[in-house]
Image (tube, rainbow, N blue to C red; front, side, top):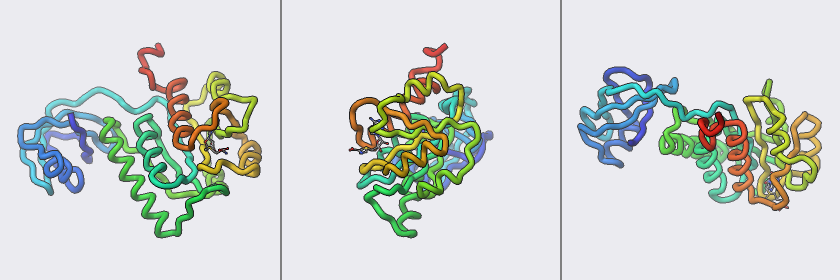
Length: 248
Ligand code: SAM
């Protein structure tokens, strides 16, 4: 059943803007069709379309749905800017895997360079991709794609009670598995480099700031593989990937 975002769950709700256009024009949903709606505060419900046109779709509440597709842990992914549509891919997969926040990161070896206008345009594009992915995988909230930050700006943001995992392919002692088995935290910052990897200064800077510099194993993963693998591993070990029931 298709999912749409509304302001709040009430007896009669109205989809507008992109939500109405997607329902009525793209999906050609008509009066009588049932959909799922999710409110800004993360509540879900089933509703029936009363009338639909590309600018406004009116729906009637059928039943509130007691479910959650939001993970029990809070992951922020700081991802080095990557070429082509790789970053689009990372955003989409990260949302499906349960990320809470994505921070596009400019590091020393980033190949792509954006001016202010391009940065704004890219952030808006990635936020749209996040919203579409959230709708597709029935998330109850849309993850935030922050403005592009530099490596130093990333560390200026306060993150109390976080476990910071800095993924470095030359790390040969500490694996991500060891850290996760010791960590009781519920909030994680995952930092993944661009195609060119991190500089030695950036690795040293991460260690100085208390990050766990960890390996994902003996093979060099592409940046998009590393990001999705890191998220899947943390979400499996500490979150709900693999099913919360399986973990009880
Ligand atoms: N310097 C790498 C090389 O020699 O080809 C390129 C970096 S890799 C393509 C992109 C990013 O993925 C790295 O900066 C790191 O964050 C992550 N990564 C890739 N393989 C990894 C591994 N085995 N362990 C930890 N991180 C890894």
